[in-house]
Amino acid sequence: MRRILLLGGIVSILSLSVTPAYAQWAVFDGANFGQNVMIAARELQQIDNEISSLANQARNLASLPLSTLSTLQSTISQTTALLNQAQNIAYSVQSVEQQYQQAYTSISASMSDSALFSQAQTRWQNAVSGFEDALKAQAQVVGNIPSDSSAMTQLVSASQSSTGALQAAQAGNQLLALQSRQLADVIAVLSANGRAQQLQQAREAVAEAEGQAQYAHFVQHDVYVPGAVSVFNDGS
Image 1 (tube, one colour):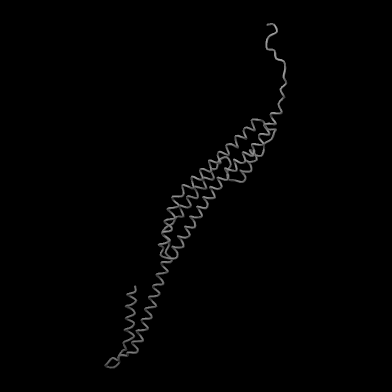
Image 2: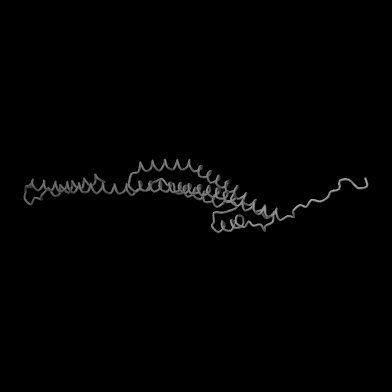
């Protein structure tokens, strides 16, 4: 392209520099020729600058050939699905309120021994399941580390080798998205761990009320009254 433009410039120079002769001999105007050469040189330089500018714009508008968005979305979906599988007490305000009232705040001396035992069993199962859910969340997050490391290496490499501003910006945005997903993993683990600890603490707190109810049941029974016991028959 530049060769064609240069050729066009030369043709323009020649056409400007040669004055048609109406007489028998052509007249060469040296001053006019030099001026035309300078004009043509400036025009060629301007064209060259425009070509360079277009080339830079093309590089800046080139899109990054690497995308980790689908992988990040898949990992987030897996973590979300794992949290939604929480056992016994789900991550729902309504569910927590309902089940907490049933198993943790309804202890009274009027309850039967079987009802007390059933609720104690429910609280124990909730605590064990909470710790199991926390272990699963931790395993999921730890399992994400190798893929995160690979994605980070690729994105940093793409950012360093980017040919334009758009590619560099896209690589930076994907790195930020990766960090956001890792932050979501941290929140998931902290939530699962906190949930397990709170369930265990709630179970321990209710144990005192449960003990008081069981003691009330015990003292309600008739006190043992000693009586005479015949060891041998009178006729022996």
